Image (cartoon, rainbow, N blue to C red; front, top):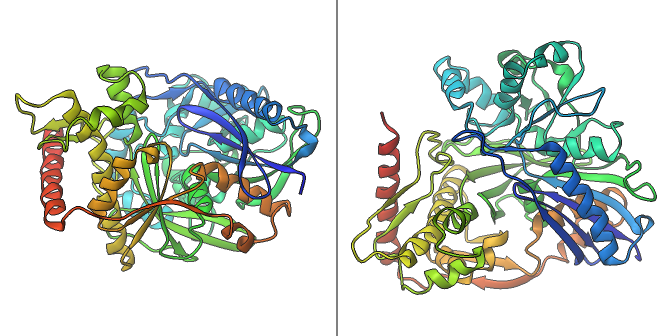
Length: 496
């Protein structure tokens, strides 16, 4: 196989492109950060044109770095930050407003209203999602209600909604394709995960015209080809939201297998097989992927702030110069000395779903230093992960003995060790931690026949290091009790 697969990985803070060879190894990668826009407290936006220009730029750049022509690429796989909502004019291709990012909380009060009206049980039953400002539907409604002329344009069928995958495909194909895949659609709060179709009743609740919505496809098929972006056409053949792509890239293809991605947020997913299961612990039930006629479902626990807590130490507190410095700062102390940091900057995700909670640091004494705060910040990532894992065990009835991990923060060995200690389970880091991009590449490669089947892909997944628990269990239990108290403090602050 002298061809390659190109993965486009459009994330919350940067756009990346990675070229993979036939053994699933990255050959070259390019990455560009883009602007985070904070118009008001709790509001987070991106410029859609900048999302596209950075993604298109790194796609061209990575082929040059790898010394490849577009004719050397067998297919493009796309993975993306999910729930982030874009609305654009079908005729001009121009956005009518900035992209409203998944972290954005501007619709929190409207979500409270939906709950008070009792719409949450219908939404949960149809979509597997908890009513929260995190998902796309309330963001679409906000744009229609607040952007001048948007409702009129939508009524005439002239507006298109899409998550980031739809926007990239629209631009890659010069407006020929307005599509999404089942994994991204399942994060919109208007997609029925049982019928795998847009839900007319939910669209009515949110007052969203169906004409705005993309056509829903499987996660692995040849959707069409690029137009004009490259010197020759390349098939666009795989799409999955970033967390589902990581689950696939980690080869968690059997029910009960779990992965956790440590990125801006933390997202834990468990493969639950080919039927959706309702969670009793306020986890989300979501579509993992659809390949051919087979749909796989997953439980997901979303932690809104993980790696972002390190960025906060860097950008807002200025206690580190670059993110990588946090490990050394935290290592100056043996533990956090009773300091707990609940990084609820954007509310608390699973299993609390308290959108009004705010960040809290407790247990500070005169002897507390920046090292203790850095340590507590890192610890918070592991504590939040523990709570989601416990919820998954409870809902699935499966005792989870291993967690496959990926994402930026997994390079931090002390954090991964602390994670294994808290979970009292093995934490397994694969050789290739770019599993989100790997998953997108695999989906595209299966569709184009670049890889034959799942067996061929499973053989490529290799362990780099396994972390096993070494901390005495009574010590972990004491630490966990302290964390629960810190959560109570964060929730108490949110009460009027």
